[in-house]
Length: 73
Image (cartoon, rainbow, N blue to C red):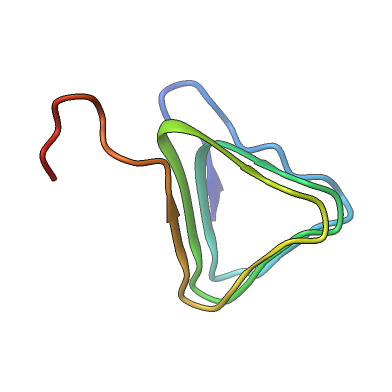
């Protein structure tokens, strides 16, 4: 699932592979020829996430932009 969050949408070049079970949310930019595999989550909800060219987020991986200032979670 690829979806916007708080008005920011993921940027995904045509050369990328995103598995149907992956979740890419918010301020996320994938580099050319990168891939996001099964059940991986890339969540740009607090800050931006930039994944470089030819990079891979593996199965069940979680990439998050971190906690908001003052958030203790």
